[in-house]
Image (cartoon, rainbow, N blue to C red; front, side, top):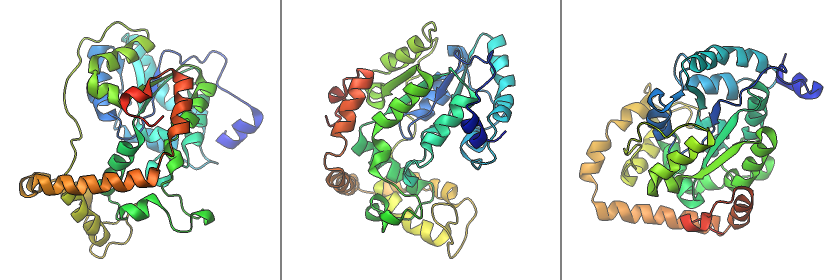
Length: 324
């Protein structure tokens, strides 16, 4: 059965399907997902993320299929053995991938579609959404976009030419109006936990504790205090952006003149060199310029959305530096 027919007929999962004991962590990107996946959602803490392979299969199974070919029953059957194995071991199964909240550089165009696929595949699951102050989030996702192979300047990234034509998805400010996606998941699933990334930075134990309480589990056995995905020098990103245009060939930068396989991964090995050679003061000045440009572009756009997030979740976003 394809997804569109399921929507039309209102067909859901079998009556005995109950996934209220599993957690689906949807992101957002650049909100500590790597830490959660590698250090929090581990068997020692009572979780299992085992899906028989890389997490990229989550994207392949749920986000990637065409609207007319996605089959929620078939998708469910793929993950049921891993869910049952986790249950047999007394673990909570976690499906975790930030791509489930959409891909920000493309405006998160499919985030509602993914949410609807998830609720048909895993009804009654619990949802974890981690948000982050929007200016810092845009700054971080733009850097990640370059790391992934993108070649647009910051100006072109933020504002797509001829956006009214809508021929190709691009970044748009609406992707970080968090209240819209939060409300949608609350309506679909009911149990939704929203936690600020800034809490992870300031109070890691409290951050992890909220997830534990949400899942009705005992305190975690281990809370690793590690730093993941440290910021690259801005100079490195400037160089890579132009190099992507010349040497990369992927969804974000097509048709490099000299196409080097896995160029982005190869370029990443140069980070220690850029860190040694880049004067700290110069890098900070470049970083500040990017920050100022994003702040000017955002210009208070998120205040109303953040106020609605507060109403939906009770979070004190002002305490964490969000515009309200």
